[in-house]
Amino acid sequence: MGNTSNNDSSLQEQERAITEWLLFHGNRLLIVGIALGLIWVISFMLIEFRVLEVGPSSTMPTLLGGIIAGQLTLFTVTLSINQLILSRMFASPPEIKKRLLGTAEYRHQVRAVMDSTTLPADPQGFLTVIADLLQTHSEELKDSIDTVDPRYRDLIEKCATSLHEYAELVKGLAEDESTEILHIVSGLSHQTYVHNSVAVEELQAELRTRPKRISEVLGDISIILESIPVARQYFKTIVIQQQLARLSRYIVYLGLPSIFIAVLLLLVYTSSGGPNIPEPYIRPVAAFSIAVVLGPSVLLSAYILPLAVIAERTVSTGPFLVDE
Image (cartoon, rainbow, N blue to C red; front, top):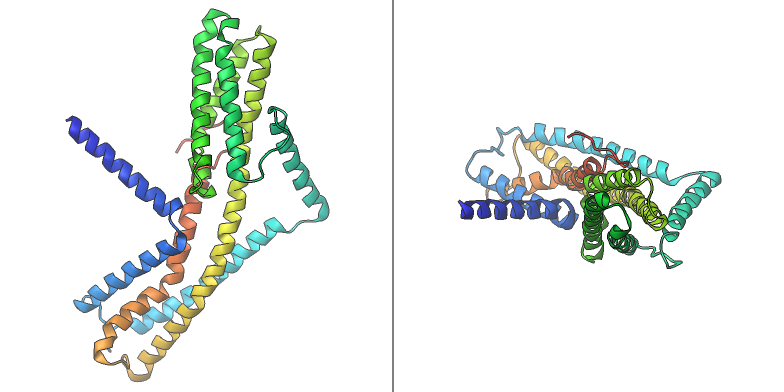
């Protein structure tokens, strides 16, 4: 029974690792290449065993015509993506100044609870500082247990332990140099943040007559906790804009050749009633063509799916939990 449970747990871990690699860790272009390779192999096998017909009686011309229309629609989607990105980038001088002042104020609030006067500019370094601050304050909160009413000591210890574990989670994600920002944003559990934020609120409400130092520590912890979802949403916005911009560029790169190949094949079929290709080459060429014309759609899926998962996981920013 124990071995079965361990095997199931190991299998789940492997499935989770594969899913995380496909969504966040893996290079997008490599995943697209693997997917198109699989499409080519599957298509070739289906054509080889006569499951798919690519000869004169096939429906390839109709399929190619539909794909061309679909690719043109995909270009329209690309233009819409670019318009969305540009709408976020363009602004009047007062709006740009307001954004800069908001970012500067956010960094100033974090600096106010730390000893140093500087903060790292890179996301990993910034989150590492936040995690260190949270660990330091959680330890200070735990050390202050003896100064409060004994009936609140368990509550304080439980809250301090949870905060320390949350800090370790954030620090573990931020210190891994191989981890991309997209994965860090996904890994910053909103549920854990909410539980800790609510626990600090409850602790502040319970300890009405608390020493001044504990009040200061709890106030600093609240500021530190609030800075985590703000950083997550800000980094998410930047990364999504970068990914969408890169996606639109790659769709243009891959879309034009795919339309060109689809048009050539369509002309080959319609000019002679069948493929004007030597018999030994019909099947591999047809399979390759299927993979190429589906390239932009596979590329779109490879980029959009991780962004959709990120949007689902980080839909909430405040101390509220949304039922799934």
